[in-house]
Length: 231
Image (tube, helix red, strand yellow):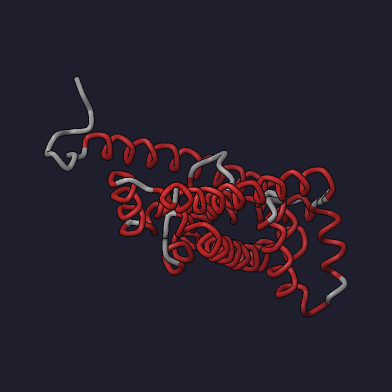
């Protein structure tokens, strides 16, 4: 009975954390209609403090699953390409670290208590190569950053790893969306073409790198000395 209760506690903690994230995402979608123009109009009122205010507001919005591309578009429209990219990237790093710390406090211990030997080995691998894992995830198209940042926190990726990985992996896509937002405001077609080109190139790079790493992992030797792929 005591053992069953010991297992139930981490299960309940982890389930509660995941449920809370799901509810936050649902409530954000239903009741927090955020637009790039609306965000820009509100931030402009802060004058010289608009940049730092945007960093904080954008990070908090991203934590509740407001799409990163929308925030980057708003940043570009508000600050232009250079400063929009700078403030947007700082905000992305802040979001990633905050999400990781929240997840670590809420559910990492539960994940470790529930993990078997193989799962623990994968967790240790993620911790060892956390920066690379974050870089690859940030480059992959169509995968939202915030949920994965929480997941990285649950499996024990370190703060400096997710910060550096986000800084490297998010920079190209952040530039693309920021430049696109700036181009939409200024009417600069050349900048828009460059932004689209960078976005496409980053998506292709992310898919290729992800495929190569997946193939390498599948061919890696298991603890018993055998390859994970079978003929």
